[in-house]
Length: 170
Image (cartoon, rainbow, N blue to C red; front, side, top):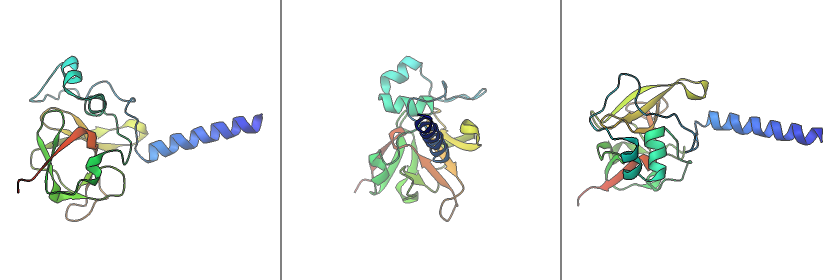
């Protein structure tokens, strides 16, 4: 009996460590608000309005800083020319020209479009990271890391559910 209990607790600890190390936060676990004290955004809505205008998954990510499961977004495999926009307010965020396969399971980019995103410190999971949000509506998009490719060396690791994709006109 004691060995089963030890197995259970060591497995639970390993799962928690894996979740923290992989920077994955389930859609249900999230802070209550996207705006930091003193921040304001061009587009604001009530919580009820956000719930009405977004899918449950979009709402969990954009408004409560959830994270979609890796490899769950069709945008991870989107390779056409075009633009990725905020699912909350439709602001263009990233060009497909800056998208790359980071092998992390989330759409990744080496640079956003000019004046599209803003960042702030995120201290969840006991580590300091840089959270990325839409500069117009404050919707949580993901995080930026300094392990990306040239020319910036950055990896904007975004939740696909927080974005839409519009192919370039041909």
